[in-house]
Length: 90
Image (cartoon, rainbow, N blue to C red):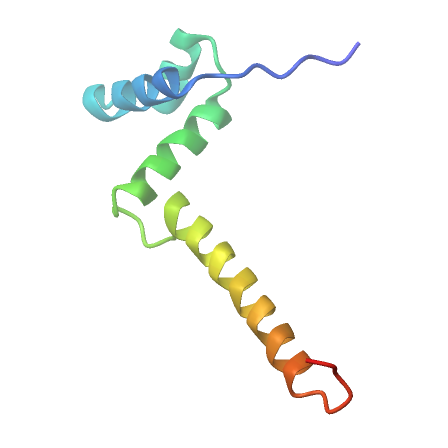
């Protein structure tokens, strides 16, 4: 029977990352102490570093904005193409 994925709330994730940052314990040790997968905690720590600007990557907010802007560009291109169509009724 497949394992059900556990969900962790924001407070738990932030607390786990804070433990890694403040104690300088290895991610694997903190993950073991908290009963979570080390890879999961590692992902949270990496995302925290990105969000803090410690690593050159897009933050979660920046990725969301990029997706929104790409969608807007697509819509504007479609509007422009339809308005330049000589056969359109607009």
